[in-house]
Length: 399
Ligand code: MG
Image (cartoon, rainbow, N blue to C red; front, side):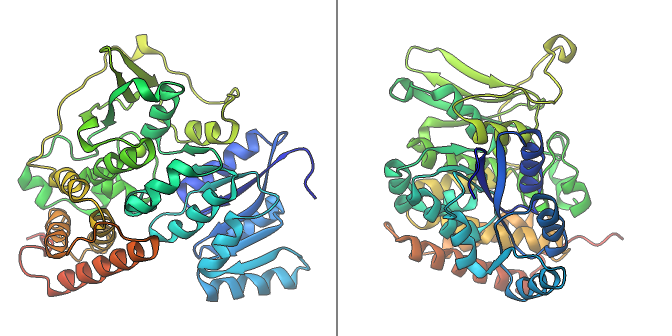
């Protein structure tokens, strides 16, 4: 049953972005209805979401979790269809009654559903970075020719998207702003001893653990450089980064004649999520408003490549092109997980990624399947380096 409300599919509904997307759906309950949800394995939360939203279908990536959820739903007489595995996520991305698909899953698992959603001609909101970055030239080509509208959910890219409307041919370059993360004022000695708890305490944004660590290493901004190149068909030298502590200016677009257009607002992911749902319209949102007079000043400074080598590694991967960005993402995923698990030091994240990238033999034009293979190779190689655990990568134990 379609009804008059816009059907929404949310892939990654139990993650940080997915929960915020459902909050936005509460605000828009008169116009939008989540009809399809997908999650990795957090079936307790997904079960709550099913009770609240009564979607037509859900998918769970982890098969054992999908079976458990089916049992719970069966016991209470629910008729919600439960799909499983990667193919389940793809089916949710193509769900007929969903007119808007939000791809908010993190990591490589988003690639196949993203590609499927792009090919359907539906409107697609993308909050996943890894698939956009790793997808390489094949995905870039698909993004150029995709039948439906694509609306970025990543804050900076949503900002560029909004500034660019109708001006794509006038663009000289774009500027991504970076908060600098929780370690922006730390020296190398402090960074060496940085703990996962400290890395997760982001000063401005409310995000999941992987992206919070990426924000602390500035790899997040590095990935966003490649993401911008992919989304807006830009060269590496057309994407600049500036540290902006207040996270109020989300991005700028520099036009041919020297004019800059910027998008400003309080840092709140629900705003780009709402925009992806209502684009090209906007709706009133029940959130705080920016008051520049209370803020007083906005600051901008260049990033420090010595303390944050991940930014440089991402630029290197962008330069190499082809399969290199997929390798960058795969190695980063494993290194960040190892850091969160206390197996390697904070600075070892960059060392491991650098070594995996150096060893990789670039494939210039990988297919989407080959991209996934390179990604997994990088994960495997990074895991080996973590296990070898020479003193270069081991975490500092408190004396
Ligand atoms: Mg961002």
